Image 1 (tube, protein in one colour):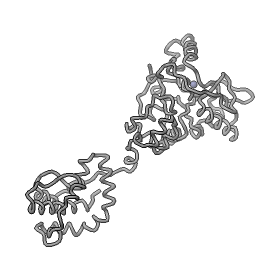
Image 2 (tube, rainbow, N blue to C red; image 1 turned 90 degrees about the vertical axis):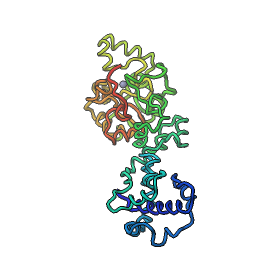
Image 3 (cartoon, rainbow, N blue to C red; image 1 turned 180 degrees about the vertical axis):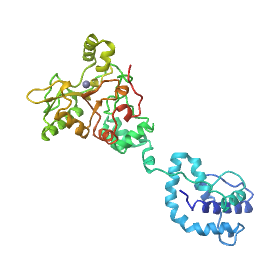
Image 4 (cartoon, rainbow, N blue to C red; image 1 turned 45 degrees about the vertical axis):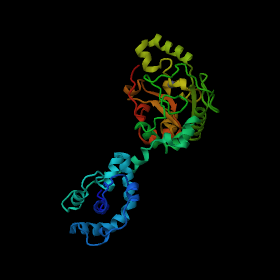
Length: 372
Ligand SMILES: [Zn+2]
């Protein structure tokens, strides 16, 4: 975008600077706007009468002056964007031309020459980029939500799911730790164990109104969300969904992983079961679901059922994602598990769904974790 107003302030300032030099023995100041404005000399003839500059100066001034004034507000926004992208120096250059001690006269002549290229053309500013490159860690509402371990409030304070994701991915939110299991944004995989490895959430509860097969419990926020989803599935005519298993302690995972190693060997076990300290189930935020008619099926029997169709279409509305999708084993390290759902919170699940993501690793810009 070419701002016709850019040249005019340059010319006027250069002219003032020239006048300043002529009337003063001090050096020409070349700093930021407030300083320049505060030291602006009284109006001089340079501003009003036939000035010593070329006709091109007047032509540029008259052609661009009114538009420059009208565009000043918009240009301020552009300069702000440049500040975010290119730093203070870029803004200074864009707004005021070279602010060095270089001869103002020569600078003015160059900037007003009809054949000269514009001094600085601010790059196009994507409003979305401006919106998402702020650091939420300096925001009081965001830090308060972090202190309260309130994922939804934090995401809201960050500007919503897509903005939060962008801030995390671009490194603009250094106070967000994706390995903190007290937040629903935690990412646990074969490269990201719990610390300590025997971490246990508190409290875990049985989801109200949900049949539990193998003693399943979930963290309270995940449990409430599962209750809502299961009720909605039933209401929609998709049938009954039961929780086969939810929270598993480190100790339980030692046993279940050991069983898998015995039957499949280590590499086979690693494809279907997490090592102790690396399981999403240990967070209390993951549940294995089954479909029930007269009786409840096994995990392997969920795929293709109306219940599974409902999960695929609507789980995100309740904060859940299918964590290990078919075709993404190189990223997740696990074979397809349509029954394994992971609670990440409503706003993040919506951003995940709307963004077309298939793994949490990609959602948060993390490395693939195919193996330990
Ligand atoms: Zn599972």
